[in-house]
Structures are given as C-alpha cells and as structure tokens.
Image (cartoon, rainbow, N blue to C red; front, side):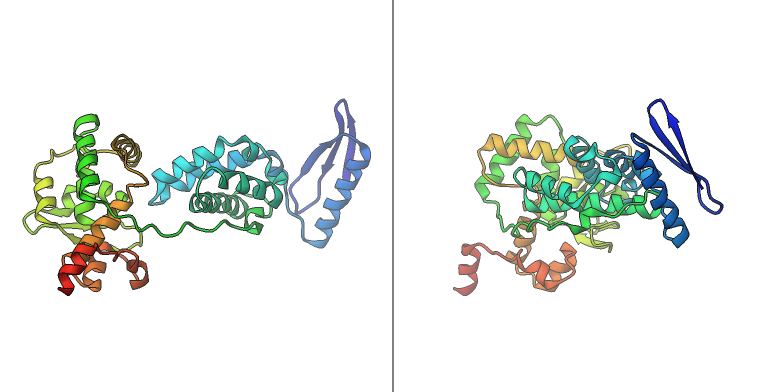
Amino acid sequence: MATITKRATGYQVQIRRRGFPSVSKMFDTKRDAEAWSRMNETQMDQGIYLDRSEADKTTLGEILLRYKREVTPLKKSAENENIRIDRLVRDESLCQYKATALTGKLFAEWRDKRSQQVTGSTVNREIDILSHAINTARKEWGIHIANPVEMIRRPKHNKSRERRLSEDEESKILFELQTKTRNPWIKHVVVFAIETGMRRGEILSLTWSNVDLHRRVARLIDTKNGEGRSVPLTLKATALLEGLPRSIDGRVFATTAEAVKLAFARAVERSGIDDLHFHDLRHEGVSRLFEKGLNVMEVASISGHKTLQMLKRYTHLSADVLLAKIG
C-alpha cells in the first residue's frame, strides 16, 4: 500500500510492496501524489512496473559523463569521442534535463540548431553517441527511460570528399609546419600520411615494434575496420622513419590526434589554402597509389578498404597521369 505523508514542502508518497524496491517521491499537491501512487501500484499489479527513480534524479549530462568514464575508453576512437562528449556536455540546452524529461521534440530542436553550426555528418556522429549512451543507461545502469533519440530524423551525411592536394599546396603546408609549428612531429606525420595513405589514428598508434625498416613494411594491428594489415613503405617513408628519434613509450610519432588536428588546421589557414582537411591526405595518398599503376586489389590491400565501392571515390586521377596512359 502507498503511504502519503504531509511534509513542510509538500506531500511525500512511499510505496512498499513485497517483491519490489521501495520507492518514494515528493509532490506539491495531494492529488498529484495520489495519482502517482495509483499509477505505480497498478503497474506493479500488472507486472509492468519499472523503477524510474534513478531516471528522475539523473541528468543527460551525468549519463554522458559516466558513459565517457566507463564505455568510451573501450573504443578505438576514444580520444575523438572524448572531445565530442565534452562538447555535448557543455550544451546546457540539452544536458541539464533529467532523463525522465527527455523527449523527441527536445532532441529535434537540438539537431536543428546544431545543424546550423556543423555538418550533417558531425551531427550524426553526435547523435550516435547520445543514442548509445542512453541505451547503455537503460540496459545496464537501471535508468528506465525510452530512447527518444531513436525517434528523430537524422540529417543527411556529407557528400564524400574528393579533394586532391596540389604540389604547390603540399609545399606551402610543409613549409609552414617546418618553420612555424612548435610540435616537431606534425610535419613528419603529414608526410607519412601522404606517402602511405594511412588514417590519422593508424599513424599515431603505430609502434616501432610493428615497423620493419629492413623489409620496408609497417604492420597495423588495430585498424578502423577491425582487421590488421601490412603497409609497404616507400623509400621516402622509410627514410623519414630512419631519421626519427625513438620515443619512450614505443610509439613512432609521439603526439596526439588533437595536436595534429589543430596544427594542421593552423598551417592550412596560414598558407591561404581553402577547404583542406587532414583526412584529405589519405585520399591523396591512395590516389597516388593508383597513379603509380597499382590495381584495385593491390591498393585495397594497402589502404584497408573492405569493398571496391568504398575505394571507388579514391580513384580520381590527375589529368596529366591519364594523358600519359592513353598517349
């Protein structure tokens, strides 16, 4: 049976029933207290009761921070996800709400506002984090709520980029990184990305134990698609590695993803180059493999693409190379 007690601040409901956790809640009016107690007791009678006390006292921001502590470190993309979660938590228009107050309308309004600030692909990555965090809270942390994120429409992903790097742009960026960037690793990371077509995360996780300079091969153990691969090293890439100092932690490039991202963006801006991202270097590196005459399967074994459709957008060869082939 429910017990309703008059308190100085309102009416307190307490429900104690065998086989169920004891629950209590404060209300401003006795009428609201009675309605809440009837609803919960009916659900207990029907065997559909869920204890929402945790959801009622936990905000979305608290869910995201716990997710960051317990779940994110288990992911390959932990560093980038930490940055995204920190950005989400700072958004009080979303994260101040209790879990029980979250609605599809609230997330749709956030999506529309966020879509005016960043690309559709960025919004979708943030939606993925929100949805998985809420589902984890539901399934593992006893925070019994629906997941309203699953009900909202997602923005369209960006069109796949086909940006190539010209010789002039490459020279300008390397000059900026050589002369005006304090971090000594960034220039080497950029050159290595162009020479190998590796992703930024693959480059930064590469260790000396997985590099064979004699055979000119770098072995990637933990990649985005979950499968390891061996990447042959060009003479330029090999010479670059031979000239690097050995870091204490065994990594080839002793810097962070955020440091690379910021330094590269600043170098691009100082160079006066438009619309160039670090990931475009992978596109450039893979495209150059095709220009050297490698076939699709050979390039796929180096780049790690699992399907030919995924690799198709990397085959935008320069006109000069195509002219040389057709005569």
